[in-house]
Image (cartoon, rainbow, N blue to C red; front, side, top):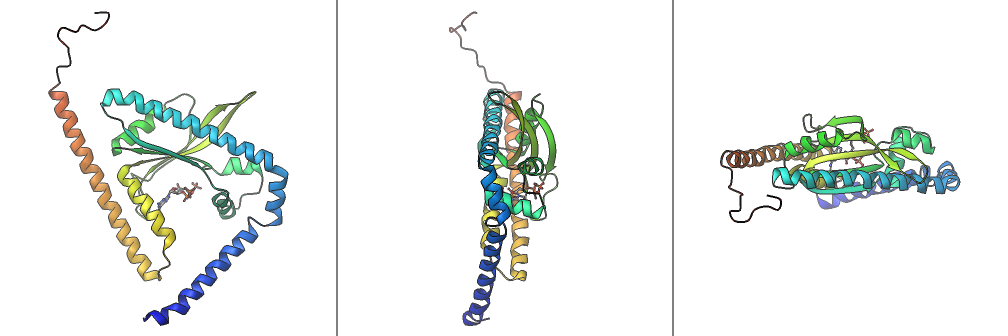
Length: 259
Ligand code: 0O2
């Protein structure tokens, strides 16, 4: 098909998309019920989002502590990076609409589990399970749901371990349990997910091309899984060698304090 023949179709698609977008904004963000809800609940909404930010701080601290303490045992940091976000209002509204959730604060708190999100990027697949188990064994963490997309990847090829947990936050006069979604990935899984996310929302391809690219992305995900396993095998070999050949760490002539 020539470029000229392509243009009207792209334009039509673009127009349809902007109409859909406008309808969405009108029906959700600008709907009377939503505007009334915001007007009546501005302070409680701000407060609820502040609670979610507090919960994120609690969870991030726990992972920083785990990383620091495990770094001594492992002689390396098992966590590469921790990021977090509070869900955008736009994304929250889309989810509420999709799941048909009533426009009340309690319904939001009860039904939307990922308003607070923390992403933990680990070095190796094994680190994910070690850190996740250590986190879940803490007595103030309650597991609400677990989705292991590493053992059972999504059709797209997406791999990560998702936990929905409840964590207490301590306020002036009360203790509140807040839900947080924690996503664990390796650097390689994160590389794939970040790029796939960007490509997913940027393309406007005909169905057969979209399918071919989806197949390609799934294949990339499989290669990334192999890469993760190979890197882990290299690491395991080094660990085993070091265990079998321990370094002499004593300092002759420099006794430790107290010796
Ligand atoms: P955001 O806020 O932009 O991150 P549930 O919450 O259980 O009712 P949901 O939302 O389908 O249902 O949960 P799921 O699939 O366990 O996790 C959703 C989140 O996982 C997404 O957030 C992404 O961060 C990530 N994710 C899931 N599948 C894919 C995928 O195929 N590719 C990529 N790149 N990421 C994925 P959101 O919902 O996009 O929102």
